[in-house]
Amino acid sequence: MRQSSLVVVAMRLPIDDSVAPDGACEWRRSPGGLVSALHPLLRNTPATWVGWAGGSGPAPSLPDVDGVHMHTVPLSLEDLRDHYEGFANATLWPLYHDAVEQPEHHRRWWEAYQRVNQRYAEATAEVAEPGAIVWVQDYHLQLVPGLLRALRPDLRIGYFLHVPFPPPELFMQLPRRAELLHGMLGADLVGFQRPQAAHNFAQLATKVLGVAATDRRIAVDDRVVRIGAFPVSIDTAEMSALAASAEVAERAERFRRDLGEPERVILSVDRMDYTKGIEQRLTAYSELLASGHVKVRDTVLVQVAVPSRERVGQYQILRERVEREVGRINGEFGRVGEPAIHYLTQPFDRAELAALYRVADVMAVTPLRDGMNLVAKEYVAARVDDTGALLLSEFAGAATELSQAYLVNPHDLEGLKQGLLSALQADPADVTTRMRAMREHLHRHDITAWARSYLSALDETGSLVDRLPATH
Ligand code: ADP
Ligand code: F6P
Image (tube, rainbow, N blue to C red):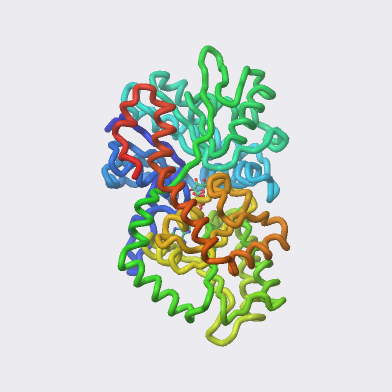
């Protein structure tokens, strides 16, 4: 078994099997924030990635991706139903996102969560070199740090949560709250997107486990676990370079022509998820059309909503509701050859996404709650000419850093409509000042800066950090 000095452990591998247009099976980068964040970082670092390859049944043997060894964890249909769709995405996900949908609790899901976390811990223990650094990702694997420490006390273990960590009054609802906290505290460093999350975690450790905790350190047995905020980012230089390329500029022009050369293009790019505020945004847009503040001939909305977690009931219901509403709005306000909303559910490659970002005069990123939201950062990185208005929810982690965006509360329908209008009608000089400041921030706080700050806090020897590429 090949062993590595750096092991990333995440629910998913960074590639996914999918069916190519000619019917053949092909591997492509999986959509989602976590893969977008880590993919560029590992490209030049010898490492192993432990995760699930999509599908059920025996683990396929995969080629290395950009020098990173893929170590597959097989999952059965039952594991997927009870761990991924159940405990991870119908208990933890809604609870961690302010319970905007009701979390469900089932004892069978908890058993699967323990079983699957144990399997990931065992797979990781096999591929980690003695003294290796292991970086466990996200809410699907909260028990892995503790389980792995029991198997391999020689490892240096980091854990990073990409989603929000809720306030005590929500987390306390979890029947197995103590076990979940214990699992995370198996790490040497627990990272969050925002300082508020680290604060929530410290409060809960004291309340539930009775341990001494500050927002930076928690004493567990004879160890000290460090905690802190490390806001995740993107490969800013890569997205900027892609957006500036002739191919993307030409694709963007074609998109604008295909959209009928409207005066203003509004774009939203989301996974189809109830946390993303898609329905609220559609309502706001529909009311602006109805009141005549926005006219179909001048303005179009492009809504990309790639289906996600399609076997989970709440996601099926959301998709039906969104599609019904898009149909209603187009039926009511569209004209022949001029729909009010261009609705797309396909995955796009990076160049096409960059071209869409370039076409968008206004980018509407209005989640009800989001750990970070990398789409907002990608849009800023792609606006190489310093134009473009970012309409951003106060409840996205990105709002802390991108404070020059047009900020809105997506729960406030009138505020959302007003925000959209302000972004559409903004003074170009104001738009440029804001965009420039956000671009400057993202050039300094890119994905490498994130990894450096996290890994230098985790790896006191500094040997790993020295292997990372420089921040641009
Ligand atoms: P989440 O982690 O909840 O999915 P983020 O906004 O942080 O949300 O990350 C989403 C990532 O998925 C971004 O990198 C974005 O570019 C990518 N993505 C979203 N929609 C698509 C799509 N239709 N095709 C390809 N990539 C997509
Ligand atoms: O952090 C949010 C997250 O769960 C990531 O782990 C993942 O990249 C993204 O959402 C997509 O979700 P899924 O892997 O369930 O399709």
